[in-house]
Length: 154
Image 1: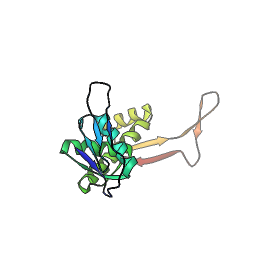
Image 2 (image 1 turned 135 degrees about the vertical axis):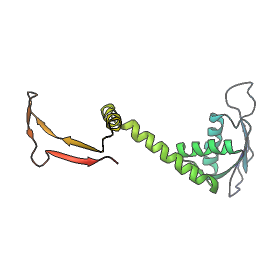
Image 3 (image 1 turned 60 degrees about the vertical axis):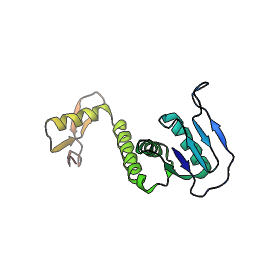
Image 4 (image 1 turned 30 degrees about the vertical axis):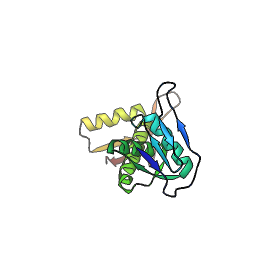
């Protein structure tokens, strides 16, 4: 598995060992390329992608489909600019999935329960009513002009 710069600048070389003594070489920075030996390790791949982004900004990924899929996922999570044309759609889909997960995580528990209920009963519309509450906790009359609103579930 290899990461390479499209511009081929000359940079110092180095060896990285992640995970402590006795694990061997995780990846080797050869200046124009970074060769990843422990390519199945997410932490190793992330470290190599971070180095590549720092050195080159945009870079190309070569390797197995499994490795490229992991790189695409990490690129979507961390904002790396991978220049492989065949990975652009995968990266975009992964970014959309992450955005949807974040939006779902931000919903209140009450709203999530309401959505589950509406889905279970097959609700096509939701009626939302705003009721003015008095300081003592008793209900007042509906707010004028805002007594109810009807929305369609999308």
